[in-house]
Amino acid sequence: MPASAPVPRPTPDEFPPFYAGYIDHVPDWADPILLMHEQLDALPILFGAVAPDKAGYRYAPGKWSVKEVVGHLCDTERVFSYRMMRIARGDETPLPGFDEKAYVPAGQFDARPLASLVAEWTAVRQASLALVHSMPAEAWERRGTANEKPITARALLYITPGHVEHHLEILRTRYGIGEKPA
Image 1: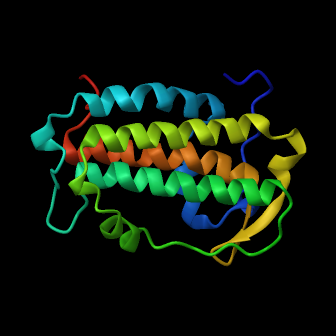
Image 2: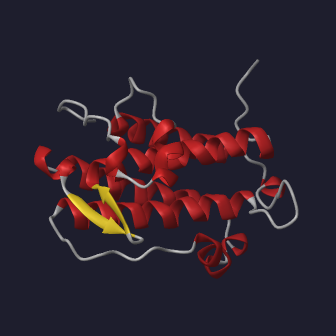
């Protein structure tokens, strides 16, 4: 668990506008690292309750299955953590974008058991947390370029759990998974 002061929220000049929605999914009062720990505990429980016959469910034609959403969470967490590490270490090499619409089919996530995908996400999240806990305070303010846009390590810290929260909302509202009690 985080022992140091929470990392301050990024300002709008630290990330492309596209990511504002993910950052907004981290409440103003929340510590993003603590939220990452909470997600690490909550997601295996959430997906553990999904019946095997529902793991391939798509809420509309052409939309990702539940398994594909989890696979996408794995891929995206890896990309965000890699970007965070490179930028936090002061690497100014521009980092490429990635096409999640191409990654998901290539990952063949529907061929795997949901539990396998959740175990993979858990391992990836644990690695992300090891990285963020290793960061010196000054690293969060370092700036880099990803997908031809300027971004800070701090923004990537907030984007990472915010992206998960974004997909949890979609899973609740469109897939009926993890619905909050009335």
